[in-house]
Image (cartoon, rainbow, N blue to C red; front, side, top):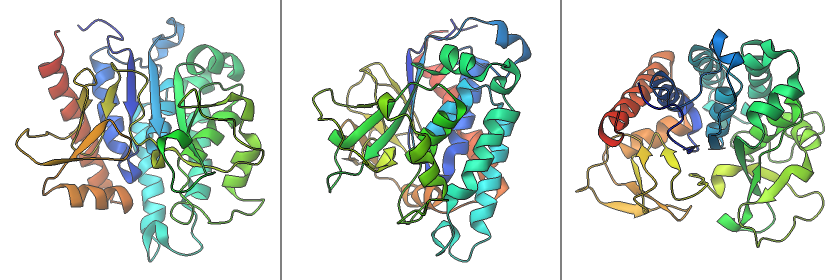
Length: 315
């Protein structure tokens, strides 16, 4: 059996509709004792993990689900439900008038509150303080300057109530016009998230970034840090074949052949493999898939994590 929590920090990348891949990776790591599994009945008595999970966009949803003790099968059900809602529209999630974010918010709330260790704990604020705050970093982008850069990336890692956690995840997944309205109305999920977000808990990714002006709009964290890093030891999880420029940042992803050409991507420390499968993966990230497709990506994530454990870690 592996030493528990051997990996000090894990980054779950932006993944679009392929959050199921992240769930498969997490399931495998939990089986090997490398990631806490608070969904187990006996785990609720365990001491909180010291591990830090980072997430952008879909990665923030999965990271939150893991730390709140949402079982892998419930994560997959949520992915299937939101995918089915988008798939039923003529232009998928890009159909005019359809807001993926507004459909996601109640599903996420139900998952975190009704199908989790958080829901069984009794004291919501106590659970978040002990098992989520400072253990989870949700990445946002401050829509102040365009084009956006990594200096516009922001981190939220303190949560006093479930509304604050959901707000951070919703905004981390909000791409104007793509996943939500370009100009949200007061009753939209994005507007509600902005009202619930604890502004005092937001801090810049770079310590020398200036404070955000009042009424700053926060959007998808993957636009400025698709692969957020805590330090040079952060493990990166991605449904795309990528590699980190620093060898100490190991990666769980589809197999990356060293002979394949690669190109830098916009968060500065990661390269994307140029492979025949990449266009298909990008399409699967942007367009919803059926249940069988998502289940296959779950299995693929589980298998890629198993390969990582076998090849990279001394068991």
